[in-house]
Length: 121
Image (cartoon, rainbow, N blue to C red; front, side, top):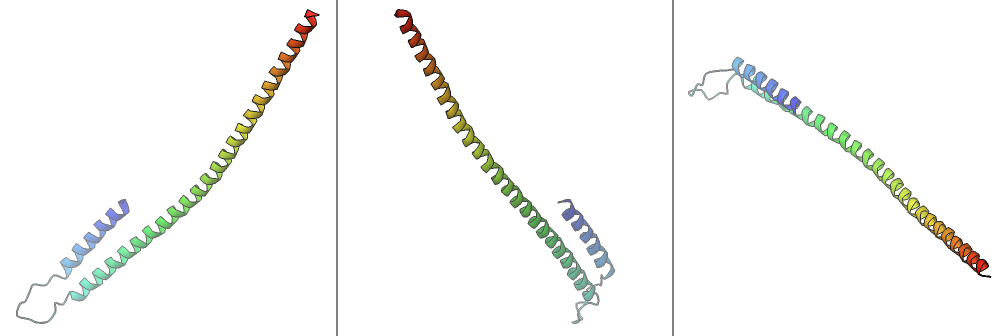
């Protein structure tokens, strides 16, 4: 944005200077073109070239940003896949832990029942 504003100010300054040098009074009786017309055409052509260069720079910057976005999107997808894989592994391990804890509680209950039966005999 700053570059565009600076470019506009510079172009306005050049245009003002160019028009100040090539100013010719209007002669309505003459049918020929004014003498400074070629200077104005050259100024317009050079300003168009500058604007085209600015557009090309913006296009280049846009392509660079899109490439960076693609890289970040790819990295995000990879990390997200790893995250989901870890979540799935965690979920499976949690089930295994619960199952083993349940088995231990069942074994403890069985031992307690056996002890009670032994005391009753």
